[in-house]
Figure: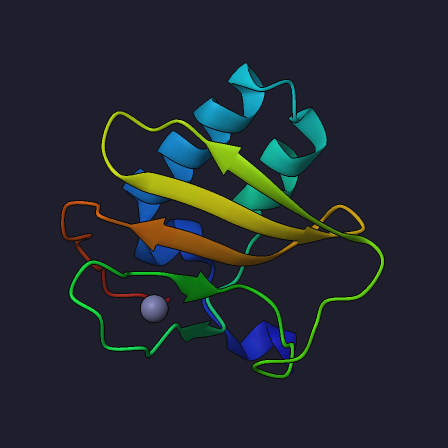
Length: 108
Ligand SMILES: [Zn+2]
């Protein structure tokens, strides 16, 4: 089913450009490569004004990620970007206190 989801870089190209640059700065080259292929599975949906987080993998909401889980905090110029990573796969991007992201039409 994963192919049904648009690429995040197609929808939010600026986000992915910034994310990959920040990951490279942190030495997370593998994750930077992954970021280019991330798919937009869903939006966070919490409804908080400051939250534009996105889900980039199918994972049941509220379930723990398990033993391979780690958080990668980045230092963007504005707000916060935090990745939930499981075994080198980016599951979720926390996007907090960031200027509104402009969504591009993801149709091919
Ligand atoms: Zn949220």
